[in-house]
Length: 327
View 1 (cartoon, one colour):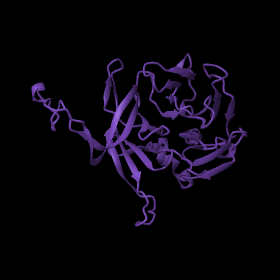
View 2 (cartoon, rainbow, N blue to C red):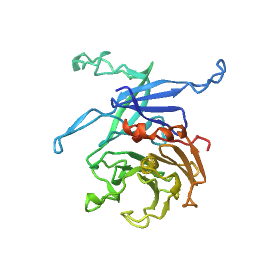
View 3 (cartoon, rainbow, N blue to C red):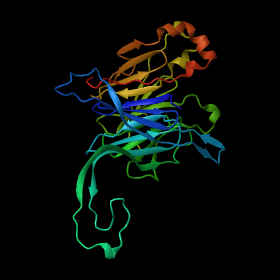
View 4 (cartoon, rainbow, N blue to C red):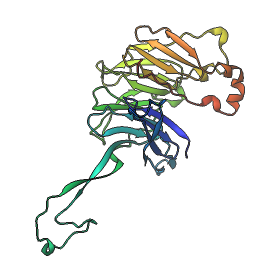
């Protein structure tokens, strides 16, 4: 239950949220620099811990829905509080993380323990005052978005309009409004009429950081599709298609498995995107669809061990990628 399943920094890098297989979210805060203390090497301390998801049971399908956190996404900070989205296989939740360092005292109709006072005992009018207290960090659920995905959710991404976000499963991508929990719009559907004709699944999806109408999604075949929501309500036709030609001499039984993209991220400028597969990280220019501009071999030493990794299912492990904050 304590095994970390996802990690996500907020926009400033001051907070780091982790989700685990037990449905918990633990938020760490970077140590603040002071004049008396030299800058630390990026040390983070526990800021808040809360239970985001509980195990559920789907009685219609007789399936247990585990509590494991699949993805966490921060919303851009608008005020003193922080907001984040967390999701398990089926349900997405919006959480508010806020601080309290003062408490109100001197109520007229309540005593110091919070019990109601008898009206006849109120003999004078008091003005409540705020008194300092130890810092308390509260996590409160604000929205629950459910019942929109038949398959397991693998991605969530907040739009640059800060009002909508997308969620993706193996075959569909839905568009949500942060204020509306009971309705979403299907913007991608790759489910064939005959499931025997299914050749690929959606593995990740991400909104463009500046253009709220543009998003990309990757597939288990190692391809990336860029879609523009201005073209049609259902983006069944992509605007751009990114794929690296396969070298026939290096093709093997494992080629399709290791080419499956497990994560895709836009750069902060929106000019590039980064993809992660089993053995490499690739950087793509949005203006060049036929090959990546950079390829970084990450697990090249595992190439000779693919057979044993296949036997123990480790070849199906998923890895994430992330841009530096100053890319």
